[in-house]
Length: 245
Ligand SMILES: O=c1ccn([C@@H]2O[C@H](COP(=O)(O)O)[C@@H](O)[C@H]2O)c(=O)[nH]1
Image (cartoon, rainbow, N blue to C red):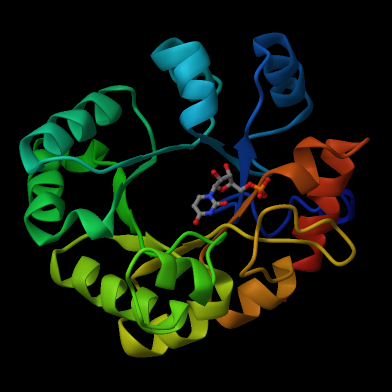
């Protein structure tokens, strides 16, 4: 029994699955069929702007009811009061994690954190997006930022930590720097994960799953390499096996 669990990749991830599968589908039946193939002991799930806009809170609640830890990736960025209320609406869905943009500034992040205090033991993790994994130095320059992605991520991650949030979204390329500059407990959630040989698509600052874990990432957000696989469960199990250190 034990060895079959190990062979299926379940052994080291039952308590704290590291892979967060990004559900980016435009058809509800496709998403539901995909989720049926997975298991909450093998992964967490992320719902982002596409699926939330199509299918709304009931889709998120359905995943929570199936015992999945759900990362609601809506990247709130607005005036502090609006963001605080949106964070509460997300927490009311029972999600495991939610996020705001760090570039919304300290007041916005503090309002967001304070708005979740009333959830006490049921409080979702609150993290902030630093620099999107699809951006490089040229993209930053185009929006008036002269720092390198690494410098900008570090600056925004320190600000996020000072505002008392639980962690950041960054690329795994910045994980080791952030783990050594901020704290071990500050969560690093890293999209832009590409198993060896898979297409980068629009992602720029990428790493393989194993490189990301070795660099200090806490959670790996992976979408297309799993959702577009001919055998998603097997791909997930292979990735889980590749990050057993
Ligand atoms: O910096 C960021 C922030 C969020 N994302 C989201 O993660 C997934 C990645 O999907 P892939 O198919 O593995 O590229 C997607 O939902 C993005 O919205 C990100 O990629 N980078």
